[in-house]
Length: 121
Image: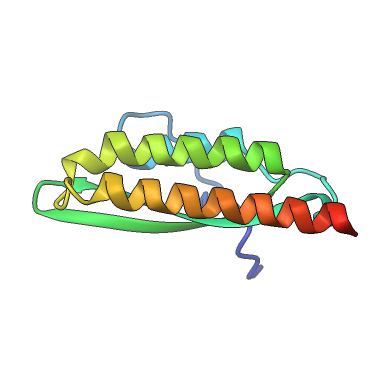
């Protein structure tokens, strides 16, 4: 079994769910940003947390990616939009947008630092 943390979370052999709901929305995001053959030295690493739930509960997922910088920033924005839509239905709806935006800005800075370091060398 592969322990690579940078792979898509889809179950082997399971069809891609195009239904409605937060899990289907996350699957669509993973499907739109698959692993590609970009060399690792041209990629940046980042982590983002998504939140969803319904009234009395909240589910948090951690997503780890290694993508080219422009695709990484685009995916960060898509995850933030996911949190703003699905996170508002969860318990803690007043806090989730603030957490999401803080995480978005932190990961954007992380990407910028990785690009800056790469340009020096």
